[in-house]
Length: 304
Image 1 (cartoon, helix red, strand yellow):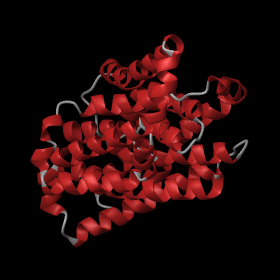
Image 2 (cartoon, one colour):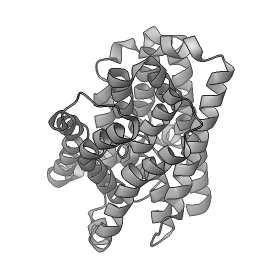
Image 3 (cartoon, one colour):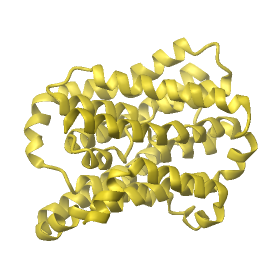
């Protein structure tokens, strides 16, 4: 129990450790290159195991607000970014746009469970944005960047269904039919989830280490990371200032907007947008890892 709590409390440091090891010794993580999406699925499953279904009352009262937040996240926010990003290079614009336009991160409910925020609220946000994304992303990339994705809506919905609906449904079944096991397991699931996410980040970095190493030590990379950090900061702040019923919801909104769908972004960038855009997307792992540590400390400071 104590070990699980220790790991959960030091999530950001563990992410950083695994990221450094994966970059320096990629072979230690390449074994998982065909299973990266399964690690994300498992993270969502672990987060959903801790859902308090009394939150359903809160969801019913605020479903309209949650749908509005979803539209802000995957439609309004990326369009605003597109309008103010013209001075940037094309591949940098596209990489940042993918961050701004993808659905809620499947790991968000797990992070909400670490920080004792609204798990069900963040889960419903992930589900709504995932349902909308197969329609919004192809439309936005075509009409804003003149890029046509050779990926059918059905294929994208199947992928997102696998990533979101299967693990969340399994978690619901476990909570319903294996109550005693779930109650005991959730005492250590935070530590397991922390390691699970750290392994996922390690796999992503190891698989793409060649792209990272090629550009990492340059002023251009510093420039990209600074832009990424500003974008992440803006996303967290946007989530925090949106209307909320209480402090817990405020911080949950910040978490929802501040996280990114790593797996989906990297998949899209690698298949449709070329190595330069992929590099920008991969670089976002650096400010994302830093953001988790900072955000975790802020939440604990203001909610404990």
